[in-house]
Length: 241
Ligand code: PXP
Image (cartoon, rainbow, N blue to C red; front, side):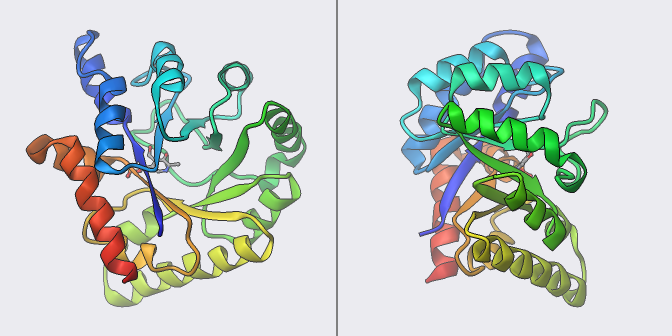
């Protein structure tokens, strides 16, 4: 069964709109778990625009499923991750002005630094994932630096219009996924997935985890987070049946 990692950053975004205490991402994690989330994901950004240091500390102590910390490969956040010891970290590129993560991490151009960082994470018992574009060169670089998993960026697929272009993006994901598996890493995917487009991605051979945030939190506004997660689990289950 394909696993679902639920990204709860948007809950913290609403809280930060008033700089207050609610809604609390820690409560959101409980609701997501009750809906069937297999992992909880949060992105501790350098600018702390949504998730705060307190959130990751409390989530680490309270989540009943593995915690996936999304992060930039920068000294401050690496230090926090090494102390926090989440089950896994997912390295993403981070730009101050972006609305959400744009594009995958360029592993090829930072191999020495990323290899050192992966070694430190492994020393702390943390698995390392890279959020990368569906590009075989990036997959090979991820293997070379010692990463355990790759999360393929499904944004271009999600945004594609026209059957031919959608098919092209899907094929790129399939080929890059095949290479991840050939090289002995775990194949994850995410970004821009929703209740309508998740099926074709969940049906990719041997995809292990899908990481989804925006669509689930949007649906949760109308039916609650627990039910929204449950619906996504169903959408995934139906696609692979
Ligand atoms: N995976 C990664 C690496 C991300 O940065 C994000 C967005 O925070 C997601 C998955 C989830 O994307 P979405 O919110 O579009 O579902």
